[in-house]
Image 1: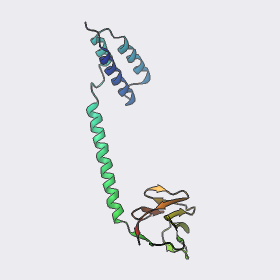
Image 2: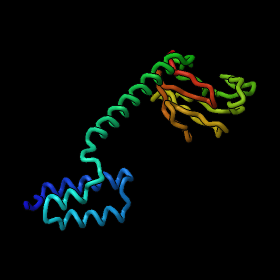
Image 3: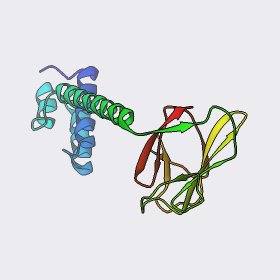
Length: 172
């Protein structure tokens, strides 16, 4: 009987680790089988420690990775299409007084949706460009899907949301 090589033991331990990570093996079972692999005197004993485990998970990992990448591409494509369909919010080319965004009269951009706070956000211009400030809104201000806490620099092409209303910033 041929003793298992170190490479065969390493492959067996790798297979045990994969199955532990995927939930097929409990911690106790993993430790017990690991001892069997490390003390195996023959390839038959090594095979007996792995008898009920799939021999190679590379194909399933490849399929999962491929499906994940395809799904991510589809999501990016959908987001790109959705962003292009949004109504534009034009940023003036030069600085001016801050643009107040909200639901109440007196705001520079009045949005008549109940998800928008009375004074929701403000666009301010400085020498570096435009900055969007959330003014403590209830339902949040978002830029490119990320909630604004305080202020964030914005550029033409960015997607902004005030409550549930979405816009794409455009250059003026």
